[in-house]
Image (cartoon, rainbow, N blue to C red):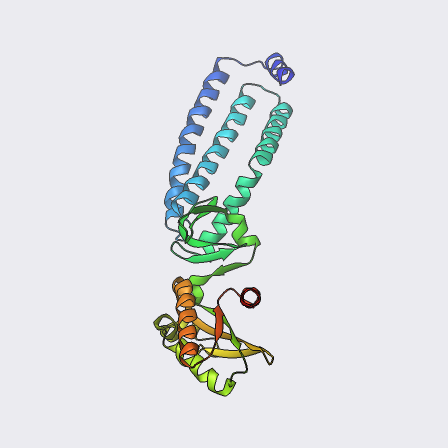
Length: 286
């Protein structure tokens, strides 16, 4: 850098008019950058695909580009050799690219997200095992509020590069509850009891009003037999509920199924944690 500055001074010869012209170019470039920034903000504000953060970032990039070009013109007017100036611009651009590569990638992903609108503020999403409600969309990240009170920032690139589930678009989710019936139950008698128990849960029966699951063949509760032995029978009950009510719905269904089976005179173990929990529970009882 020191050699570049020394060479610039030694090879530069300029007079008073060159200085005046350089000052004029610098002032004009400054005002042009300000006007360009304002023009970009006004123009992009009319495009609903970009939010305030994305608009301001694009406007700043335009202004800085104009200022960098202005500085290059000023150095040329003052007699600086063009080759060192271009080399300096290339070096600065390369360093900026390497330093801002991650930011630029997230910013570009943010533009795509805000333009195509795969998610919106208030949507409940799940990506890479992280689930929550979107409370903020910025040019670099998405802020999620989880059900346990935490806030998590996810880079915008993660939403585009990984499978994304927008629960607010589907409106409802299917859940499962497992029941292990002890002894040799009459399944023809048990199945109607289970279906009635699940249908009695308000958060399950109301899902039929959710239009976003109309593409699903059926939203009615279903009962499936997985294992039957002389000692027990494993049954899965599937049902639909609103996404925000999924945990409360599973809890209510577990309780309703246990009460219904107990009322039918059956000994059972009911859980929403899957077959491993039931097996461990039976082993502990035995």
